Picture 1 (tube, protein in one colour):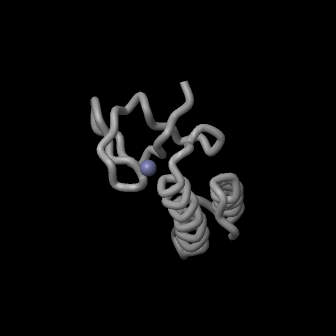
Picture 2 (cartoon, rainbow, N blue to C red):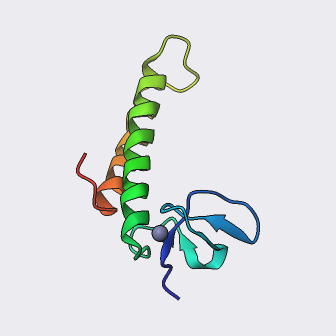
Length: 89
Ligand SMILES: [Zn+2]
């Protein structure tokens, strides 16, 4: 079954989708090719971009437990996900 809603939380049973609706967990997905709700897609794209910036910032900070190289890799992955959700980095 195709998932209509983008997943943002993980409470058991039902979750809050990216657009703010409470929906059954089984109707959600974190995969860009499965989320059909436009508001969820926009939300997920923004969140992945936000996380990409955050992980780069943290990995560049003095004393970070993850190195700048790792941070860059993780950021690139999230930027790619954001792009697949329709966001332009
Ligand atoms: Zn939605």
